[in-house]
Length: 248
Image (cartoon, rainbow, N blue to C red; front, side, top):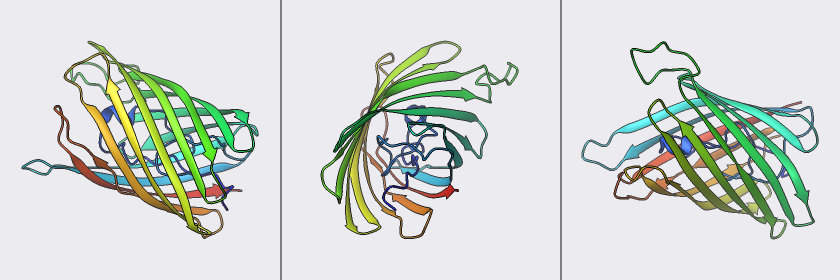
């Protein structure tokens, strides 16, 4: 079962709009960091995911979302997918190419595109061309042993609005340990920073959770993200889950 590739969970999607613009629709092996493996050729992964976050302010605002991921294995080294949120405010496309494979080390290149289906300006016609973003980067996986692995992802994302553009860097690293044959404990850190606008937040998010893969072709992912407070946004806590199904 450990060879079954599963979901790019969206735990931090519900915490930061900037994070939501990362490459989506591609698979991962833990909580949010992309791994260096692709979906099996000619196979499809379907994955519903849900998450919410609570910001630690006086009013304790709660944000939640529900989305669906479809990822297809184009070749033995390439996958392509899409994430469709229930709100239908965006479409998120992603592609992953497995470029380097050694015994313990693997590297993939990733790229994504996000387009909005809503307008930020109420006086404008609502079309998909009113907002878009591009993202690209690479992911590295190191298999320490049969039970321990580490994933690292680096991405750069450009986001285009009516009046300005954003350029954001994302760094994400996670370590997983299988305590039993099907139960993996995961912890990691996600960092993102916008370099074009001083008023935008610099986010640091701690991800902690588990993956359960005891059932054939089904994997459950649970995550409990915590975003640290910074000068532009309060701290927040959240919960996210995803159920990934491999369609033969």
